[in-house]
Amino acid sequence: MDALCFVLLSVLLVAVASAAVTHTRWPYRAPCAALALWLAACLGALSGLLMATYGVVVHFEGIAEHETLRIPFDLTAVVLAWMFVARVIRAYSRLHRQSSKRRERHLTLLSLFGRADAQIPAVILPSRQPLAYSVPGPDGGHAVLSDVVLAEFSDEEVDSVLAHEQAHLRQRHHLLTQFADAFCAGLPKRRFTVRFAERFHGLIEMRADCAARVQCGRHVTASALARMAYDKSPQPDIASDCPVAARRRHLLFNERCCNSLAASAAFCMACAVAVAPAVLTALGVLAAACTWICR
Image 1 (cartoon, rainbow, N blue to C red):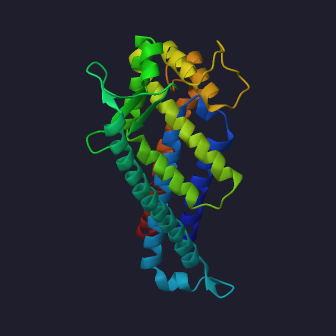
Image 2 (cartoon, rainbow, N blue to C red; image 1 turned 45 degrees about the vertical axis):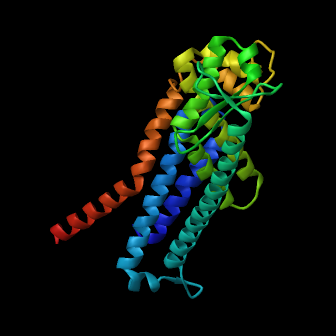
Image 3 (cartoon, helix red, strand yellow; image 1 turned 45 degrees about the horizontal axis):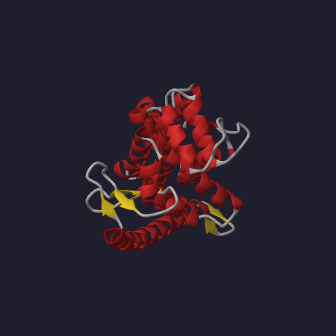
């Protein structure tokens, strides 16, 4: 395959995976599989771009002769693709610096206004609203709860909320969200980028819900989520696209996380997408070797 084909393959992998995550409903039934599919598409796209770059470097003279409107088309496609990658990397670096500064300031405020609890591995803040979030840090970060959660939630619900926030810290979800935000920053500001960012953040929350359900049970996790969101309805609206309703549906209507046929198919697709450029390259090398042997 030539360089242009690898560039088109890279663009196709990322575009199809992003569209599937953004515009379909199955990711709400298999959040972990959807995240794996999108990350695998990014990995496959990057490997395809590296192979396209290698082809340009090795066969530079021949590729430079393939001109359209007096422009070496293959070389231009590779350069434009790397410009997008550089834009994403620059956006990620900026977001990472900004987030690090905000976390440092927030940790300082927590040391001033928060208090530690001997029985709960979290920082307790005085608040009239139920709050729960996590702040990554050099020592593994901190889970933060408001004292209203401790006063009004049951012990099982508090454990569920803590398990959710600790999953964010343990699995470094802030790095994934920064990468997704940097990817959106590299794209034009359209409705698609906003919707993709919202869906990706929702899938990250569902991934933490899966970790909480393993420790505390799905019904307890769903109950704690409803109380955090002031949702008093016993069953979430099936037709609603609200992220909280989608998270509650996934908890209440699925005994396990990502155990459906769609999840299995998405995991298999993720493996195929990640290795697709390498497989195509191996097939091309094998075909070239067979042709040389036959001669």
